[in-house]
Amino acid sequence: MAHAIYIRGRRTDIIHLGPITTSATEIGQLFKAWLAISLAFAIVLGGFSLTTKFLQVMVIAAFTVGIGFLLHELAHKLVAQAYGAWAEFRSFDQMLLLAIIMSFFGFVFAAPGAVFIHGHIDMRKNGIISAAGPWTNIGIAILFAISGLIFSLPAIFIAYGFMINAWLAAFNMIPFGNFDGRKVWAWSKLAYIITLLISIFLVMASQMFTLL
Image (tube, rainbow, N blue to C red; front, side, top):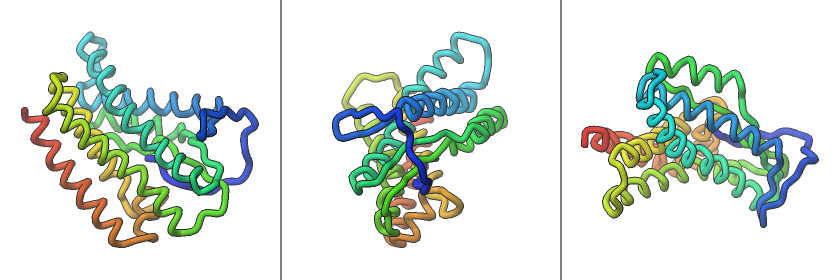
């Protein structure tokens, strides 16, 4: 999913939201990626059909994936900006299309885009920026589990929210390419192992939710 990459150049359509800077371009890119990933997960979770049931699954996926995806990206962005770097999300249209295609085969390859960063970011900072995304998903997964015990929310909503965020955390810890895991591994082997083990545990635990 999201990961820190360096680029040059800046947009001029900057929007200031308190301490956060964004742009109309970034907002549009996030919205496009959110819709595509939500559709892909809805197909995997409910099977594609022109029915009310699929629409319901799509809405649930949009909220559960939307929360996980957007906060994952925001975590990368906020940490990078805290280090004084320019940071914005850009979608990978080919990967969004691939995610939708693969969903028909029962699997989502969730690499919808990346938070691009421009500034002086060393290996340690890059590792922390990258770890912020998976740890955000871990936190959201735990919050979904806790909310299921405290509030009278639909079981399917809790199960999907927990499962999707646990899966996103584990998936992003792949230690290759531009995934978060490679940068976390380069920064701290201990941080990588702890994050990966917690993510895998939550993925395994999420299977219990689907059986409830």
